[in-house]
Length: 376
Image (cartoon, rainbow, N blue to C red):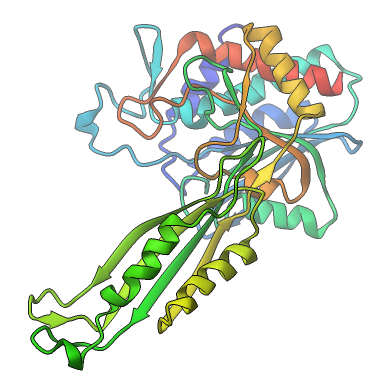
């Protein structure tokens, strides 16, 4: 039993499931769970594979959620060993997806197998939500499963996402929320002309500069107990023809908000437009919302997860909302409590991605204890 999670992790790493290709990973998981009484529903779209597995029909409904896709390996010459040949050395397991997040998927499965064997009369239902579109655009993945569940009135009570949240030691950090992400694509209009005759032109770079200064210095909110203050960052800015003697006619810019639950999308949009209008700019502005913020305050799920970390790993986990977005932003639409817990994230998306071998079974035991705390 002590090697089952490691064996399954190795098997999943062997599948070169570079986003959005699942390469059969979800089928491997389904074949382990269907004999235990899980029903399987596959939702495929745009080359993405999604699988919804469920056992039981009663509340509370608990869900493990994760992704089978991985980021590209980059030059294989940067790796010490083949990224899709799981390799153990110096107490670590190396391979693409070892930390993000095939170990978590394997631990989901083995923790569930042990829990069901020990607790045949458990309460509630257990579900798995798997996608191969988390590392990509995330437009045909978890969001589509959530949409399908919502349309037929299905909701979840608790969800654990297996993202690699740990910083220095397994279990030291639990994500109980994530900031929202809102991108603005801005076009400032001026008048092109010769640099020697500026009175016949209108330089959009000069026109935008006072507004840019104000946007940079704006305090959007103060954050709260769980979230830092909302941030605004310029990501790209382009203007000019490449010639040194031409005043550009337009400036294009991209900026991004990472925002807390203290701000709304509409309020942020309105304040940006107020600043641009204040400076009498002629502009076009397109918005792209990647996800709203979500937050799970201290309650049943947070208590169950922190207790499991303490029971199995012997440490007090810290709650955090730092980092980028995750599929938790979609799941929160139909689930009242969502948290993320997974391996140490120091090597994710890097060459020689790895996880401590000893952490693989410890993560499975932690997930099992979460199930015990909520459903036993």
